[in-house]
Image 1 (cartoon, helix red, strand yellow):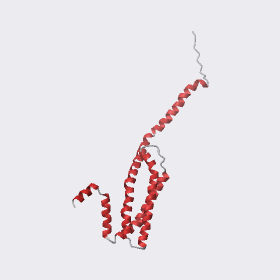
Image 2 (cartoon, one colour):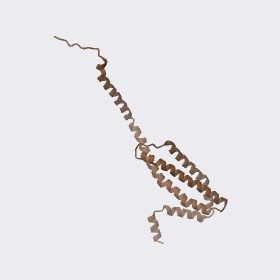
Image 3 (cartoon, helix red, strand yellow):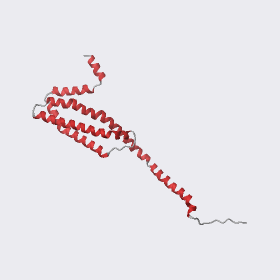
Image 4 (spheres, one colour):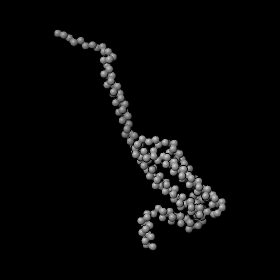
Length: 189
């Protein structure tokens, strides 16, 4: 009867295939750990896409329209109603400043918009946090100046004649009214 001898000693090269399996498991486990955190990232990623999409529409539909209303309606109405001399010069200087700020904000937006579109579409983006912060800070300062300085001045100037305030209100209403509604209303006159 022959016996098979088994060696309990192994050389380093004998374990190499098993080490390969072990190293492979380490890589698999590391990837699976990353995968485990994926669901936690889906909500923030979806929120980023929603905010980007809403902000793009908001800027184009609201902010630009607001700037246009001010520049076509409010600023000319206040300038036309301002008293000649120092008051009109002050209004003109303020209007020039606000209009320049509109262009500055819109230029900042134009530079950010392509990266924001990438975010909205769920693509990799190089959206610069400091540029976003500058745009927001610039608009906050713009709105604060307008609220604290220009709008009270406009109220005082336009408020001297109720017809001027009514004309501004009607002009804004007509600008934003549905063209079909305006056509039907004009047909009745």
